[in-house]
Amino acid sequence: MIQKKLIGWMLLLTITSIGCTDDIASTLKEENLSSKANLSKAAADVSVNAYTDTSAYINSGFSFLNPSQIDKNRQVIGGSSYTEVYGFNIPEENRVRGIRWNTDDETTSLWRPQGISGFTKDGVRYLLVSWYAKDEAEFKGSRITLIDISPSSSTYLTYRHILLVQPDIPAGTTGYSQYGSYAPLNVHAGGIAYFKGKIYLSSTNLGVRVFDLNKIIEVSTGDTTNDKCGKDSNGNLFAFNYRYILPQTGYQKINNANPFSTIQVNDEGTQFWTGQYYSGSADASIVPKVFGFPVDTNGRLQNTGIVTVTPKNSLFTDNHAHGIQGVFRKGNRTWLSCTGSPSNSYGSNARLARYTDGADDTVRFRWPYGAESLYYESQYNYLWSLTEYEPNAGAQNGSQVNRCIFAVDFSKYE
Image (cartoon, rainbow, N blue to C red; front, side, top):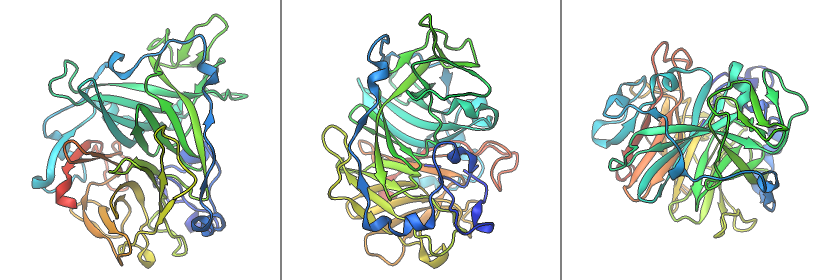
């Protein structure tokens, strides 16, 4: 669900690109790049390590909130204006809903949206969006956004950004003061999934990071400082200019299936599916795959029954499905949000590609420029996605805004 400089392929064929076609620096900050040598053995020995609990750092001295208790301080733009962003090419008869961010979030170059998911709590429908920080805000790491999309709700179309944090305190920092207890989570945040009250964040070379949505923490100094993070010796909580933080509670390392550009729960609720992003200009020997990991009732990925699918896409070199930004799985079919194709479709080089296991090619549909992850809202049969670029950021959008969130009628794409 992920934005875009061409990297090593034109300089060193031994280096592969990660995440989106965006700034490679945003992924280098979390883990090392994958190599072709590592990828070549992936299908044979993909495995999942046992769950690692990292929650000890919040076991005392903190009070927790859930999503219904969060003060949402920003307003999205509703109506049909989402169709006006650069490269939006969904046929009118397939559109069902959409929103745009407020002006600040729509145009900022310091954060980029990547993953999307959602859930319903106490009768209120929410969307979740993950972002990563860049440029002079890069030290802030990553965040999620909680958006109320229930028309009957008193906070309809309002949202709040929440900073993601983790227990590893960096030895040194630049641009801010770091205290104890928790620190920013510097990952690309390329994909996000929701499962039984928890958030699962794809972490480029690690695997999956886990967050409990019932453990949101209100920061006592929220909205008042921009250069401090952590808990000081007096017990004061800081999170830059964020009022709320969501702490990582654990992770699972996945071996030989990276880079993890996205993650989503399948329609049946039995597997997590991840995808590998490699740009459309990648060496033909690079074969992107998607992987299905069985999940138990506690949300733990299992190390048995792992499924590997190698989608075909004739738009790319050697019929490989490059540019995978998002995945959704139902039955024996995988839907892929792919960017960077060598051909345009109504102003966009992205496609929604439907791949049936064993087929020779995908069935492709128009998809907006800069499209990222996928999320299926089964109650309404909506397939949600989002676009990422601020003005003057993409290769084609120039000064035009590209960012929006949109849903299509999934039945038109089955």
